[in-house]
Image (cartoon, rainbow, N blue to C red; front, top):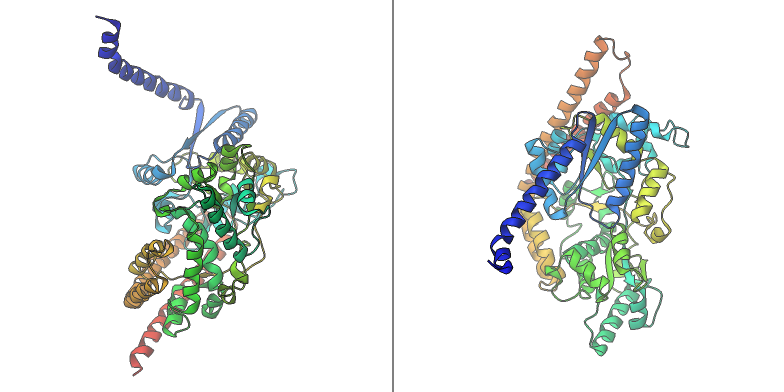
Length: 548
């Protein structure tokens, strides 16, 4: 047989055999290296595939492994398990249910990592650890400070108000801005500085489209996708609603709850087709008209690719994309960053917008949770404490061009534009009074923002489903809240029983711990609010039924 015939006949089989040998060797290597009797292994999974992240985390891991071996004379191996966003949810769900979950898990992208009932089942509460000082802060200004207070947000984002405990440790903070190609922007608009007002922003987009058409080049002002649509929604919806939130927010907690929003709707304080709401929809349309054609079918990566390939002048995203974008662009063009121009200057929109969204509530992210299935919980906590000292957190985030979350850590010079803006307004309004209302309103937003549906038609559809399903939807929400209240009471009962069991054995002092007193107060507050909301809801229904 000729050589070509031999290769043709056996090449496929040879490749399969080689792949099998490689897999066997790899598994054996991992088993000998990480599962040896004298090696303790921690696995940590995440979906961060941005440039530099794994290297920065690996630096922390190697430093910890060396320090642990020097201090304890034992070997620890920490294995990263990076998984793409598309497969992370499936991996998380199957591993948690199947009992094969990693020890340290980046929390998110899964109902089992976010729904309180699943969180309580699969993840360890971290409140006891958070109340203790971080031993790795010894000899620093943070020595003796409770671990949670060493974070700039006091770990508020990590606290679950339904489960009354902390459930993750943050490593970073993020803010959202608009990246722009400074060179291409100057070339197409004749300006160097980014737009400072909304009117200037729209004029700049118009100038870019006109210049691109004149040159016959497929350049658009903004690289768009559904991801970018949500980014702009977050910045251009809320400013229109601040005044409405203040009118509806009776308990002054900064949020117009489902009940407060529904009550205001019944009292005609607001409506989906009010001039304010229609102006909000049109403002978002003004922005989305500057995306490329067919942006609804584009993915986030498609928008990044357009920007990097200089087919879009601007791209909106968070500081988490800074490292990847700067790495891909290199020195081909100057990437600059500016904040979202708010339409306070617009002749129509300005009367509804008091100012920008405050970022004072931006808290810790990159959330690391600890699985209940781990046999090495204390070791996992020790590693997370090691990583969250000021200097280590600063170095880690500087390496990947992210914002550190530990008090006293400096932000990288490239990210000064991402420094959270404290000035502005805050508040939240809840419209999803029922599952059907949520599905209809969210589903129709994309035809609305792409210009396929008029604002008036969207408002009519939203009003119809809100009115039709509101009562039954809120009653279902009350049922869920009562179920959560029972879960909270069970958590409290377990804590109290465990405390008194240890007190009888002489393991603790007679003084009731502050943590249990906090749980009691939180439980009473939660149940009081639930009972008050339920009573007010039924009273409003009774009043409406009795009104001729």
